[in-house]
Image 1 (cartoon, rainbow, N blue to C red):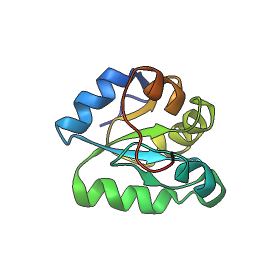
Image 2: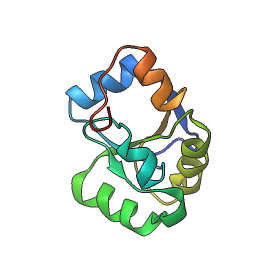
Image 3: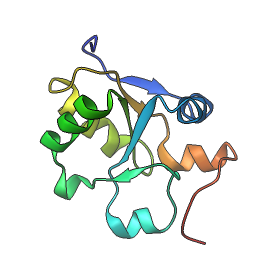
Image 4: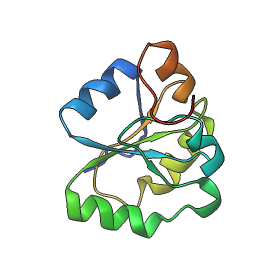
Length: 112
């Protein structure tokens, strides 16, 4: 059950969560941004086509927590807050977004 607040995770924390298969990463950037490079396991659900009902179904079916990401963490924080009241799981935001992920030395899939 969510405690009513979006948590912030650092890149190394997210990497551990992904390794333990305990989260689903939702990348809210637009498809052209996503194509330039994204976290390998991320699902692209841009803010322009955000589907809260699909996320509710996903968390119910897979019993997973959610971590939202975008370029720097602002759009993803808004999306995380929008979904928070609708899901029964932990909701987090990658602090600093994809830029912090890449600066921390983690790989991006796609792009150049």
